[in-house]
Length: 143
Image 1 (cartoon, rainbow, N blue to C red):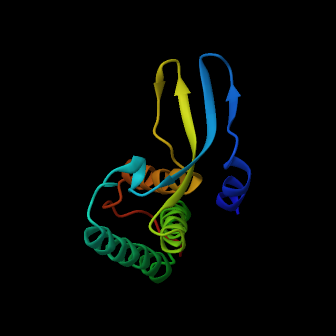
Image 2 (image 1 turned 120 degrees about the horizontal axis):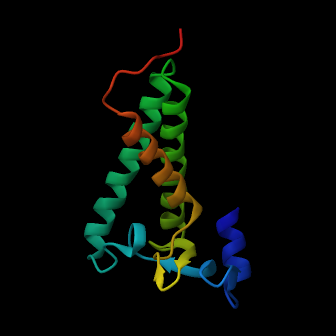
């Protein structure tokens, strides 16, 4: 829904939220690449293979999360964040001719991020949680 709102509202205008040294721009960008436009110039065949690999990865994350339902709530939440964020971007890419709707840019003085969306934030939050909690480490599971 947020991506649809971004398409509808940001096609002709952008917004700036924040102070003079720290702010967020809300702008519309149709991203043909991966996170932060990585790979945007790859041939269509390579992009199709990457799309199918990403689809398989999202399916694997969903399968893992559902088949290991006794794992810690934090790990489950992290896996679902990755699956939902990845699924959202894959749906975008499928229905928008290979593009993902991005709409956020964070700025700190002269430093700024590339354009991203909340699905990217969900993916990164899930990955960060798994990395910081030691994904390969055996964790307490629910009884």
